[in-house]
Length: 381
Ligand SMILES: [Fe+2]
Ligand SMILES: [Fe+2]
Image (cartoon, rainbow, N blue to C red; front, side, top):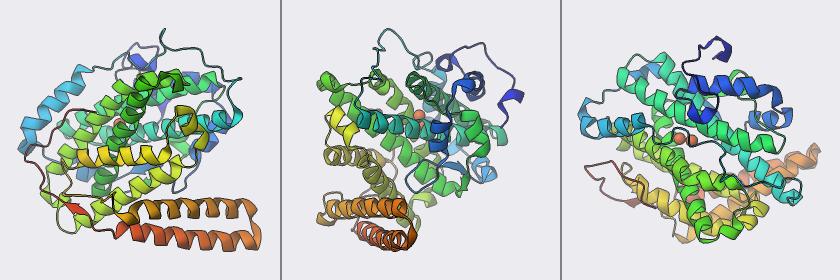
């Protein structure tokens, strides 16, 4: 997408007020001269643990017929059209001064990494949703994707505001053009995106509630915005639950094995990634193991709305193999840094251990349950 060629559809000067993703991106393009090479390079990375950009079969998505779920679809779209978070994602008087220079170096490094990774993930959603809206002809589907792209563009813009104070920012226009796109079949997009929206909600609300109870750990003002933020993600998750509901085959038969795969992959990735940021979690006053379990519990409870299985996160093999996976990941990172023959051997050994740990997690028997007739949920945590 070329931002310069996209006409501005509104008059907003801040991404918080933008009503379309295009408008939001045009505003950010104008700020891009400030963006730093460092942050953009980090956002460009494609590893198993970093957020990716996706593309899919847009024609298949465009063929979805929502008439069978009209009762639940229309209220969701109405809620998104009402745009409860318009204007929310901007710095206000609530935005306390951030002492970046006084921040402990390890915390600063991990927190900036967290912000860049979050910004890339938000923007990844924006790019995918915006592309669907652009390519589709189905009025209902394009409308939904336009609304979700609008939200994600604001989220990414707000994180970039926070990063700019630290002297770094991600060049989103550059990323759109240069970052590698991974192709996923639509059903994999549904599983992966549904889960990332719901786990995003669970992550943000868990941090928000924890900091409500322990404000002394709120070392940056952006956390104050997490409650309304995660309500956007909650609605996006609802939308993907609706899309899956239009075709019962997506959540039955052999596809249940795919659902289990995505649940395991998304949970395991979160565990490994969070354990790479010990100083960040210490500053928040959060034990990453407690946090992971809390987020999995909430996400599993929510995903019962559409998935016929949940993972048995209390199984004795669960925690043990998450830890094995995490140690294997450290071994791989150290081997890569070392390089040479010993690095290669270490990398292979670490990868084999990681694969075994993943298989052990994947083969834990899942919990089965009946999926409710009514899918829609409201945020309740
Ligand atoms: Fe978002
Ligand atoms: Fe989202």
